[in-house]
Image 1 (cartoon, rainbow, N blue to C red):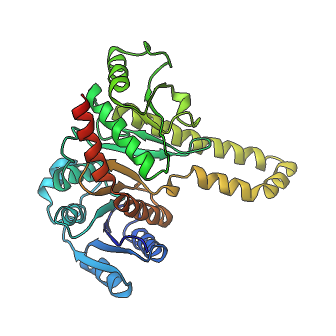
Image 2: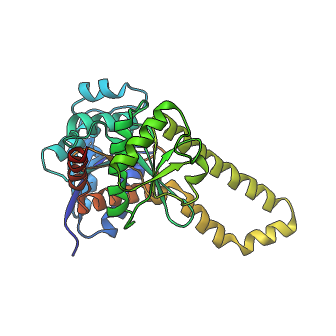
Image 3: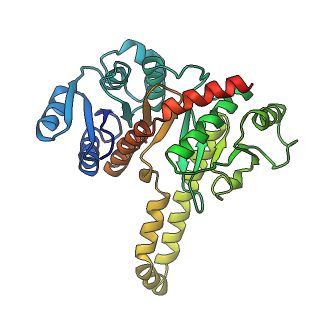
Length: 334
């Protein structure tokens, strides 16, 4: 029997909330018999769901943080929002982890300000598991910290290595620094400083990673600043979408192509599923107390399900506690 876990879920998070969130949570409960959820949102949304689903509890809230609001200001002002209440329940010990597909900025602000940072972590980092060839790659930071010092990247590497081991199942993760070349002397002064510090303080560090390495499976974890990471992530998502459109156009352009499409329909669907962000459900925020997973605003029920389950796995693997020990160990070594 798995460890029993309780995850708070923002019922209003996402472009198609609350319907898509409720569908996804129902699927997560069905998939994990040791999972319980606390749904945070308007009473008329969360209470009927809780009444009709075992292991679901309703926590009625009266406020909502919209996508276009200033994240930190909204978190401080709207203390009874579904997002803030969900994080507060984790801080108070009523739940073990939190999931939302709402405003990414607000999720980051609430998790950092309300749940709090792991002691010793200078900046929490948002990661994204990408479908690299062979085995997935964790890219971080992908948006939490636009500007980063070399010491932040060291902690990102330490936290990423923990996540790769505990959640992705990589026994000996290879960590790379995103750069413009593989040689030690490549890149800006900041990149060279980060390279030297990573080499000295992170046993899992395997050198510089070029952009082409992110999806090649060369590294298990790739670290960079949040600005660069977010640009990379959006470029990868956009390229994947365009390639599938071109592939569809090519297959539909002739009778021979249409016949071929029928023959490989199942294989293409499997490939599309492997490349879809819905498969992983969301991005883990590493470095905060408790588990926090942030989903896409356009999340489907499958993505919601997988995001909630990812939060539960993060709790069961004690990622937050292992990160705390790793950061302390790194500080002592430095």
